Length: 77
Length: 77
Image (cartoon, rainbow over all chains, first blue to last red; front, side, top):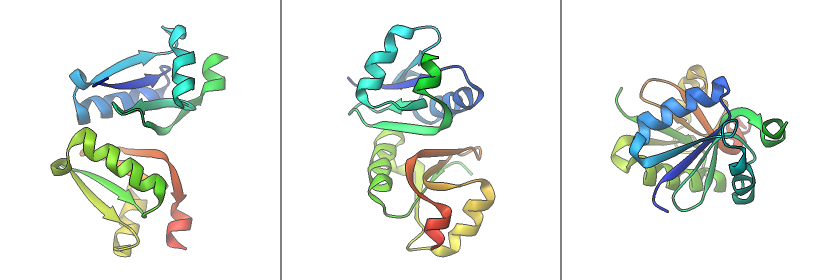
């Protein structure tokens, strides 16, 4: 995969970080996944190591947790 | 300011994140500050809101804490 993936859940911390990431790396270089709108992506994200949102998964699979909006337990509710 | 600033303290989490950030946004777009090598930068970083390392401060002044390597208290020792 060549794009990064930004996972979030719509929280204020998430939206602020989403804006920053798009500014920094360019909208065309990142897929945005909102767990509230696509819960089917939660499992794969957890498998790759996403523990909280917002999180950025780099093209080589590293997970960068950006600040702290909500834990994955909160996301799953 | 037009560059981002990446603050770190040489920890393994820091170095991994530094590599990711350089890959994502390009070395020419980020100044790297190692607190262990330049302790005089600690005060200004704390003032802008850096609470732990590694952290990326965007050109518009937002602080993104990336994963968690060490608190600023640890950095100051």
